[in-house]
Length: 187
Image 1 (spheres, rainbow, N blue to C red):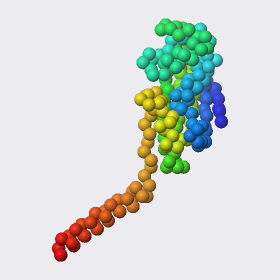
Image 2: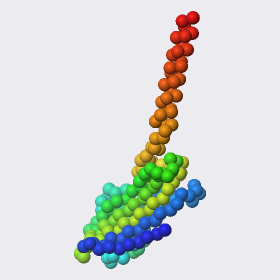
Image 3: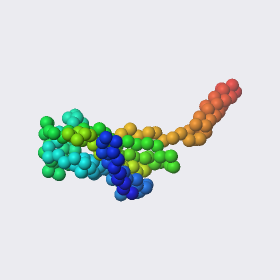
């Protein structure tokens, strides 16, 4: 399901969100592919809200900057260090959260937010993607050694087994071992 909404409070905000059900490993999109497509949507939204022939993209040290620059150039916009329009990369990240319906699944959200500053004010373009992954698919969707496509994965929630039964079995095993050790040694 794809949603788009526009609201104005001194600035134009465009949000695109997608929510996908749990699907198999063959259908899972990589984090890089999601970031790439969300940046394309956000760039198109900023160009719809203000027509700029030249833009400056900041911050220069952002890991997403080269993707944003590539998308603007694909639309025929010149990217320079000084321009009448400035695009600020406010957010661009992959995040994981616990999925309450299943211990073996994780909720993935990918968010890109661009802010366009021009003579008419500020406009924001937000593109988001939310879906649910199997924990084993996380290694498939992230690029190795890339801070851009990876994020901390929360540990699975603790269960009754983790909280009560496992410690009880360990204590019972140690107690049984000690009783047997001293019983056999005393004979």
